[in-house]
Each structure stands twice: as structure tokens, then as C-alpha cells.
Image (cartoon, rainbow, N blue to C red; front, side, top):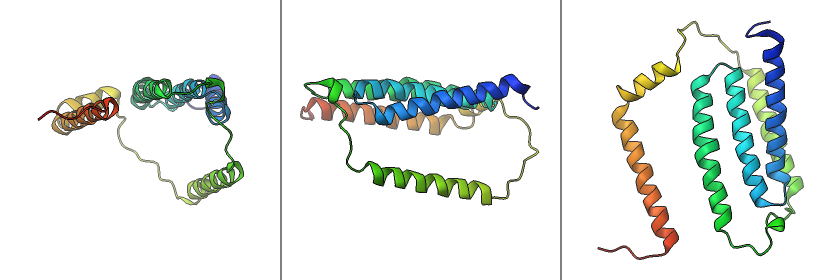
Length: 169
């Protein structure tokens, strides 16, 4: 077996099971706070799956951005909502069957696309996280900074909208 043999395969299936179980918990838990924390576990499981695929940079980005930032923002958003009883904050949906059919249709289309695609394996060089970091800090520094400023402006706008204050001119 390639890539570490039996232990590598077991780690992949264990992480897959944890990720799928946490994702199911996100959907079916009644408590919205529990769903938000399970979302973080799902993101960390995906980061672990990236590690088993030897994509260290993607794993680090997944863990930092999604599990760290997005999950924390979701939890803060949940905490800012005014609910009398948090244990029933995520009521059941009457469209469960329609949603399940739509999800199965999307999964079927993805599986069909994967099986119908003639995959070609590239013979390029291996790109490491250090190579990507160097490119970010040299070739792509101006767009990287522009995106950072755009996100800062969006954050300031969200705070102003949340506070409900008027802009001072």
C-alpha cells in the first residue's frame, strides 16, 4: 500500500467517520450552540482528511480559517440571537424529505461527474507549504493585502450595522 499502509488507511476512515458524524450532528441537533460546536469538529475533521492526503497547507488553512474563525463567528452569532430556551433553538423542518431528496440528487450528480471524468495524473513538481508562503509574500503580496483591506472594511461595516448607529460625517 502507498502512503503509509494500513495505519494511513485506518486514520483516513476514522477521520471520515468522525467528520460525517459531526456533520450529521450539525444538521439534526436541536440545540443551536451544540450544532455550532459540531460544525467546528466537522471542519477539524476535514483538516485531518487533508493531512491524510498530504496537503499540509490546505489542512492548516482549513484548521485556522474555518475551524478557528468561521466557527467562532457562528458561535458568536448564535450567542447574540435572543432565544428564551436554547435547547429548542433549532426547530425541526417540515421540508426534511425535500431537502434529503435535493441532497441525494446533488451527491448523485457529483458521483456521476467523478466517475465520468477521465482523470489524468500530472507529473509536476511537489509544491510545499513553504513554496506557497513565499509566493504569497512575493508575487501575490498586493492582491493579498487588497483582500485583507476588503475584509477589514466588511468587518467594520458589519459592526456599524450591528450597533445600529448612524455614520458620522
